[in-house]
View (cartoon, each protein chain N blue to C red):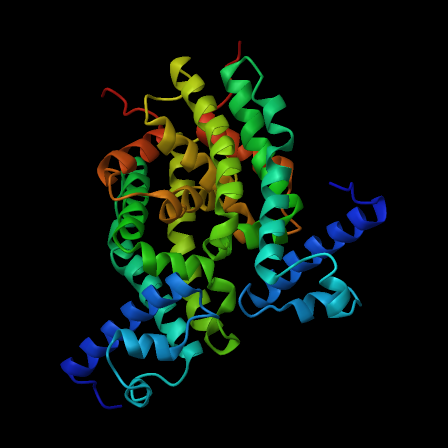
Length: 193
Length: 193
């Protein structure tokens, strides 16, 4: 397989970013490759040099979202203190969502529109993501930092409260304050010692 | 204004329920009034006897979701004990979402697709809904049941963790166990006294 040139890679990044904006603005089904090409000042024929179809472009948007989310996660999941690890995972999820709200709005709102042929690729990354959160929750339960709850419910609850941020956060909201408040809501105040 | 007959009202309910299923299955933009009519075994001309447009039908789906959500809320918001009130609000949100996942999936995923002419009607109900949650969170903060956090962040976090349930809950999950676990995650174990 030929390695894509840096120029090709940059153009692909622009295409995926623009597609996320167009799909967010118009909805996935109503947004078109024509709109994406127009925003990029490209001819549609040139766009087809980079992507095969709108369905593939949605997959590329999703893959970028989940890859971005996974990027630092393997490292954060190594933190040995259970409370610190869960705090880091909550902060990570809030940060990536607040930084790229369009990307994640499309990922969450249009997730059911992903074509079957791309389902396995995205779902296996989602499972890996979920596993990190479930393990972090279980670690906190085992350490007595969280009450004894179903760790899958707890992980989904934490992913829900943090992911939901894309629906309501405004540029005026302080992401650090928000992160600190969500951590305190779940884990309570830090012990004095 | 003429009061609609019971038969008309029932037919409207069927139309809104069917529209929610169709929009969830196909996406709002890809779903059509033809699909809704076909599912109901109605001619499209007959469907137009009840609704003016697909945009209005989406509004009716949203209005049903938010009206259902508001229904018991004014009553639950009267509970005087802050912890009991917040517990009741968490349980309420989980219950309505778990009972009508299609309705709320369309509401949440297609919320940005609502036509401008209907925006005020839905948004004013959403504000009323949000206010109940923010007041319940503030009540818990004042009573020392929750840490001192921004009550809007806290309310959005609780609405996020509970609303997110539509994305992952399965028929095998026990809604009572789920509700109890979310309450414990936020409010900790009940005090013995």
